[in-house]
Amino acid sequence: MSKSRVRTLLFSIYKYININHKEGIKRTIDSFSHLTAQNQPKKEVNDTVQWKKQTLIAIVILITLYINFVATTGYSAIPIANLLALIIFFLRFFGNKKSD
Image (cartoon, rainbow, N blue to C red; front, side, top):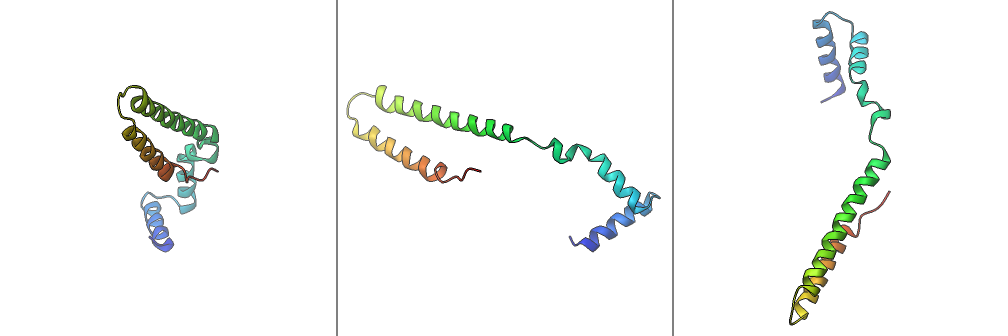
């Protein structure tokens, strides 16, 4: 939607409710004051979410290692192949993330 179209819509709405556009814009901004930059999520929250995600991935890897090597009996070439496939999967999809 273009700027002129938005401006036309806003002015027509403000004209309909009998206030000038400056007062209407001021009221609109005041009504959304909870969206200011001070109220946005902090970096610590993002770090906590990232930490929880990495912990969950580590737990899944440990469970997989336990199932493949401790809980199985007999021939171990198949669990080793599964482990290599799992490592390649995680490195492919989770290893190339850039950290800020």
